[in-house]
Image (cartoon, rainbow, N blue to C red; front, side, top):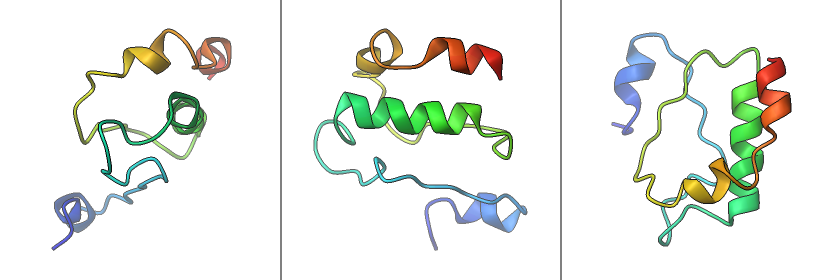
Length: 74
C-alpha cells in the first residue's frame, strides 16, 4: 500500500511533486521547494496541503522564496 493510500481510498486525489523524493536533509533546493509550494497554494484544484515530513528548514522558503502577493490573491 502506498503511504497515502488511505487518502486515495477515501476518494482524494493525491499529488506528489518532484521535491518529494525524501532524499537528503531537505527535499530539494529552497527555490525549487518554494516554486512547488507556490504552485500548490495557488492551484484552484487543490483543496488541502498536507506536509509529509519535517519542516525544520521550511523557514528557508517561508521568508525568502515564496511569492506572497500571488498567494494572497488566491
